[in-house]
Length: 196
Image (cartoon, rainbow, N blue to C red; front, side, top):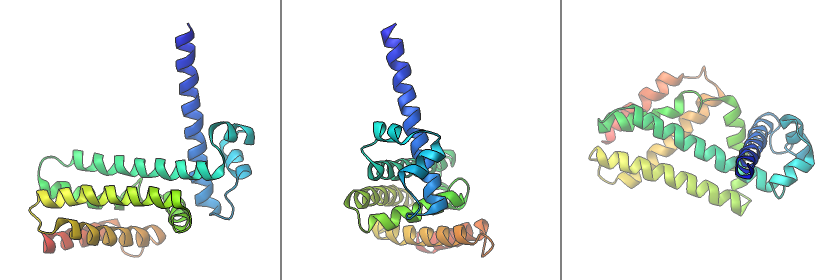
């Protein structure tokens, strides 16, 4: 009976941590860094500030956990896109790159949170480490996909294509009417065709 109760408690704690992370994402997206504080996050999550301090050492820990969770979520989305693409290396590469132009990656809330993370990565060592690890992982997987397509100098191509995808994603997220998701995907496909 004790083991069942402990498992339930752990699951509940994980769910509460996840709720706080989700609320932090929403507050960052809606209020930006300046409006992100313990009171706003707890109000969004429907919990007391004491509960936040029970699960996180403070707001900085919660924001870092939110960045890590968001990065992990993006990794899973990109991995699923590749897995769903089948066995053809070129199709897998295109799926990985163009997943950035479809929901949930194009969610406006994600843009708000992501830009806050980028801003914090410039001044906070922990956030910079999460950023560096996240982007290194993305580029490494992209390099592997490029190498599977026979690309020479896959590591440098991965840097260039990552920058291109980030720029297109940012512009598309800021103004979906500027060129559209399909046009962004076509631009990336054209670039891959010229480079690989």
